Length: 367
Length: 84
Ligand code: SF4
Image 1 (cartoon, each protein chain N blue to C red):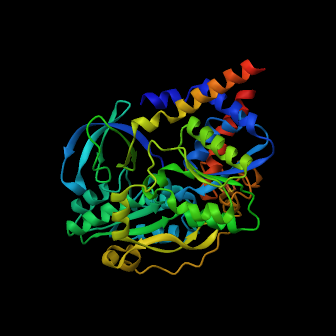
Image 2: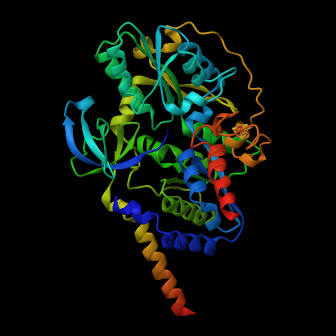
Image 3: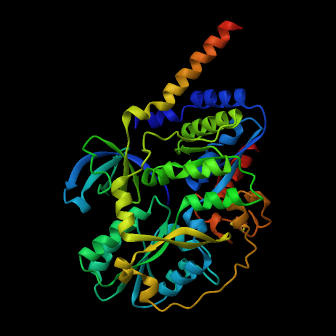
């Protein structure tokens, strides 16, 4: 797309950065909520264009990173059954469970298939009528509509050998948890643009009012992120705390009506366990009563998991913006992308993986 | 996995509402994409695609926003330069 090529132009980046520098009069700390934004910030080295007074704090918006240890253990238990084909996004295979990961189940003969689209799991179910097909349905509001339509179609097609292991997360309760924590250092937020394509952003207003934080819905290109930061700093400097929409080319105030209606039909809001963080009230989705037959947790009797993460991974503190990857004693040492100790080292949207990949490379370039 | 990528709708392949789908081009790489959530999107439109689903139609008018901001900054710069 023509705009997107232009977005990468360095001159424009420098122009926006210069304006941010011009208006910044004191230190501000801004959290980008989405892992996709973290990835872009680290990849394009955006922090280096900003004045020292602006600190970017990386947020909890990577579903691979926040899916709980218990849920990974459940996926491993299901995938280990000989009658099951587990369908998953590829990143999930290397996330450590208590004792092993899905990749080791696959290596031991488990039938695990990585998909581009959840809809492909329906084809797998149709082609394997004598097997149980389980879709490991993880994600934020962005991904939930894809899973909702998939299960809706499964019901229409009468697929009895299909179910979902649902691990869905909602962003606003996580932002609220960060704001409410006494330890929070965050003064303004860049909200996740693609989450808001679905949900819109009006429901962020009470958060902005109550915690007096500006929230700017922001896209993912380097220029989007810098413009989002500029809008956020302008508000901070003026003492404002409004919701603004930097990503208006893709996000409408009310979001996507068709998708929201489908979510309401298929899911209900539930409490949710976030890896490293703990339980957050009303921060997840589970299948509604009408779709309960498709819930893999009800279909398979699963061992109760009360395991503790003993790896020493500090992902919870990183996800809440309290620490950075380099603060972790295992970073780049015991924990590397080829043998991750924690989930943020797995996904390319995880802060640890992004730092490892791009910061290691830029240091190498200096030599 | 959470990425959304813009692509251009080339051909509508299926028109049943829940399974409305299209061939979408991402800079020349083509994939079949579900259009259930963008009923208004037509051939030629850009859509943001996430895990095989179009989740939003890109609005061209708003896409110019950043360039307007940059132009505004350039003008400000210019007028500041003059007044000094
Ligand atoms: S470096 Fe590894 S162990 Fe440390 S916080 Fe990141 S993922 Fe966890």
